[in-house]
Length: 118
Image (cartoon, rainbow, N blue to C red; front, side, top):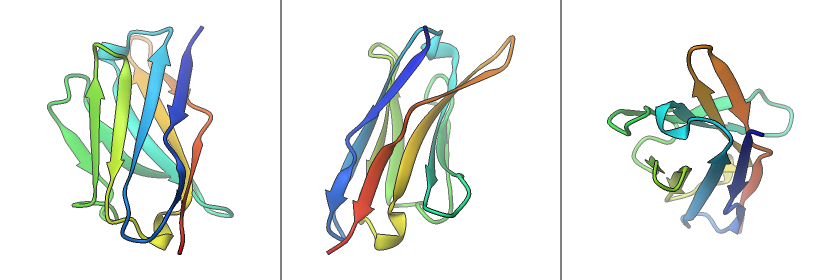
């Protein structure tokens, strides 16, 4: 059974930091591409960051470049999103996504709420 379980969300003041984690099981984690998305109320789900299977390549949305860092630990089947210098506009539900290949399949976590407010 495939599972992706996010944790680490919460309420933080502007300028603060949070580290999200997503623990995976039930599929070949080390060969999957991993992504973090976010979705604010009434808006579409947007891609935040992506990391390749080996961790050798990452990419970020322009809105988070220089503030967020995606990383993975294939030994722990976990992907992380370190979020620094948080802004109120970062407030969203954050979802992790894993894409496996041959065949291509997408798996999603349940989401974790991040609220940036003073």
